[in-house]
Length: 121
Ligand code: SF4
Ligand code: SF4
Image (cartoon, rainbow, N blue to C red; front, side):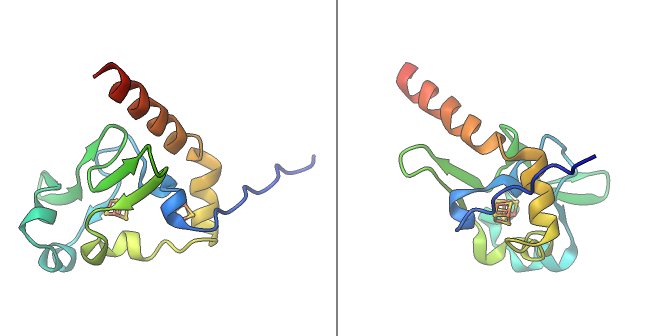
C-alpha cells in the first residue's frame, strides 16, 4: 500500500505554529531548569498539575502562543524563555513532520475563529 505523502514543511515556524497546538493539559512539560529561566510573566503562563509544571493550554494551544489573524503569524510570546521541550523540536525534523501530519489544520482554523470573533466583537 502506498504511504501518505509527507507534509510540506513551512519556510518559517512563525507562519506555522502547529507544534504549539494541543488540547492536552500535560502537553508541554516545564522542568525546574525551564522554570528558573522564566520571568514572572512567563511563569504566569504555566500551571502545576499535581507536583509537575506545564505550559497552560488555552483555546487549543499553549497559552504563550499569540496567533495574529492580520499577519497570519504565530508568535511565541516567551521565545527566549521557552521550555527545553520547545527548543528540541526543530523545523523539518521527523518530530516536526509528525506534528504537521497530525495537526496542520489547527492553526488556520484558530485564525479563522479569531477573525470571526473580532468581527462579532
Ligand atoms: S517546528 Fe515544524 S510544526 Fe513546529 S512551528 Fe516549526 S514548522 Fe511548524
Ligand atoms: S512556549 Fe512558545 S514555543 Fe513552546 S509551545 Fe508555547 S508558544 Fe510554542
